[in-house]
Image (tube, rainbow over all chains, first blue to last red; front, side, top):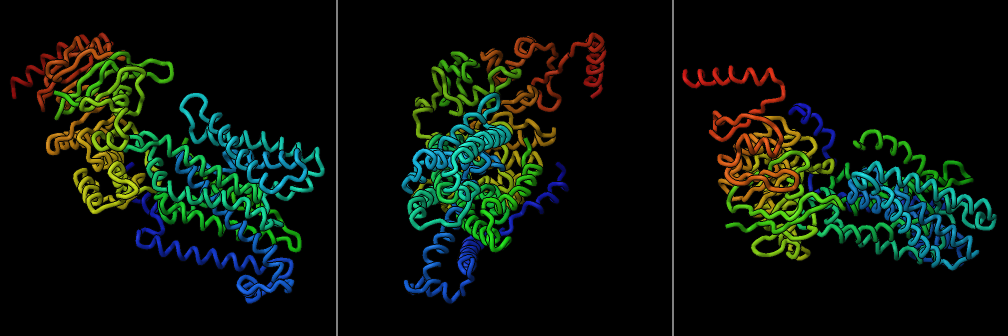
Length: 348
Length: 281
């Protein structure tokens, strides 16, 4: 590349928050934005509820008020589910992209979401009406098995786990497992009725009790992600470089895999397989803050929360009074982005 | 005297044995070049010496200690390794890359310090990439990029710097720029440099010590002035050549004969010409 070409290229890749001093204020600003999105989302629904009523319902709850009840039992669990699911999927995507140096890495594309979804559907099919804790356990197991299978298939042959091979393995496994999921749902009306909406990725009808079962997994995953974020930056330089710098890459990978399974497994147990969040958010975030994962992780969490919250609002208002599953809304947003990414960012 | 050695080292990728029972001493204070044809095991040996590849048997020893028994960061503080053709994540700035060199000096309790910043800056200056510090690595030219990676290894502050084909994929001017830099690091900062080079003439010019490999074995080693002969090149590379003194440095210069008979016939003419040029100078 000539010096001139290098100069013009640099203007495209300069991050938005160029100065490190802006990173923390920027994060706080995004947090405020997230809270505003949440409040906006709570006011919307079959019956619009004023922001004042939302405020009193949250901080001065009156159990005789019908609107307060709706907010506490229906809308609050819904928005909280959205924010934690969005944060988890986005952070899982960020960690996977850093670790595998694969711009297409995402728990949806790499088969983890579909593994978790199949396990949950299987649990409902076998047990009929399983206790809520079963969702989380099966979600985790399914996520772990899905991740393991994709990595094993994707590493076969020459050159190990290249981005292209991992992506292909993920897409193949996803369509393979999803067809089994569909087979169960078609053959068994009862299972289908119970989780039809869930399998498309949905936040509607999330109960506080299911949120309480799955949130600890995701919170543990988010804390783990923050703890290993500095290590992810180092390993994103490549395995050999990281080892040459004295990093114990084996441990980092194991811990990162556990973190991803907690995040994606927890998110899918709660809201079904919502795709593209983990793909889209980290790219946008890196464009803003750069590639230091100590910042990419927290920013991804907040942006993921905002994205799913906004997608859920759109899913509810776009065909009112009906609503779309948020997973479908995310696909509408995410698919064009995926094509753009595959076109421009994947070199091999 | 040598602190870094390999003792009866055997290295393999899966079941494919590349190096068997090899011993070598890396001389202190010098630039050592590993040379040989493709697939001769020179890069593999470098990986074995830097713990990127686990030995099947035998081992690499630093100061009498098996490198696999040292804590990972303790080894990284003494020995830096730059693999072939490293690719930085898109958007990573030069400063961020070089700062990663401080990784082995940091821990949970010892995060980024003023000392880290000072050494990072120094590494940027020495390698001449300070002016690009805030530019993404992927926007630099090949030579600048390679110097940025060397700066990262330099920030590691290790006595040994191992490099796998540091000049591959670079234009000729950048190749010399990188080799000059490594030469300066050895001369002015006492870095012990071990590098795989595929250009024998570069190796003759820049290395104090040459290790020539073929088929996983060491065929010859020592001062390039003594080691590089027409017979050695024939044995190692399977190529006929003439050796002449490099007109600039006086080090051996390898001129391939090529297989064309026509070329071989013309050689005498060229020799004559050379003699005439030297006589007139």
